[in-house]
Length: 304
Image 1: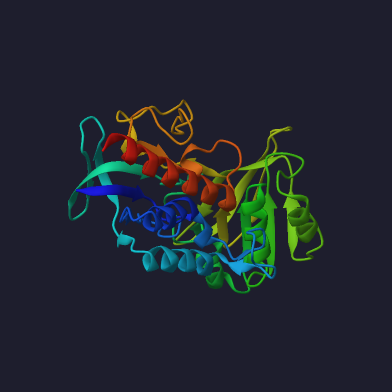
Image 2: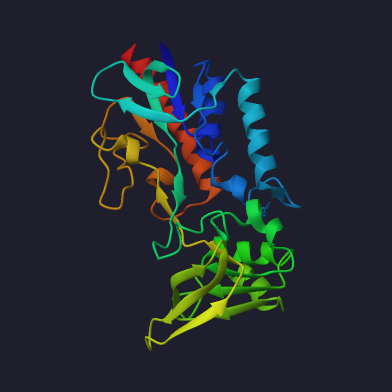
């Protein structure tokens, strides 16, 4: 019987683990299909306090994991495939085992959204990617497209300029949603072009991507653009599929918070992007992880 199982190993999950471990709760972290969370797919993180020169996303998460391990956190590097929150103790199933626990902290984060256009699935891994830092190297000297207008899209575009000859950002609006500093970096980079008010209607290719069909959302005009790669960066959806029917989830698939970090089920708590409609920042997720661990400790004191 575990005291607390933490589902997810991004900033929220690992901070929760550090706090829970220091409270001698002997937490178990199930790290999931993307250990370290979304931040491991970024390059330089410049806005996490304590790193005046910035820190690489994977390095930051590796440091957090080592810190959690130092205080006695146990890690299971598997995915959760099923949960049962309807009876206590709670049951969590992974690929290889079944775990009973008094409390749970859900910190499963979010997963990348896709365009859902013809050609996207067919050319996944053959020119279509959701991870610039994973796949950028393969496009050295090529032409690539980035779809999106937030910080992730602009960061991906800037990163891809290290490899590609030209990077074309396609955005459905006439201005970016990204932070001003990211916009300034993009506008001052001569390798980057922007196509405004447009969406990708189709991804074309033979054995790999050769181009995209672009549609102007205001005029309806369509045109084709030759490209070797399409990087999709249009946001993320909360990773809540496994929790449906177990706890309350809203119409946009975010877990509903009750009081503090509590969910609709007593003993199940939540932290990070899986319940965050607004902020979606690593530092906010980390803070939520700390709050969830403190709430778990208080809950266990009151119920034991």
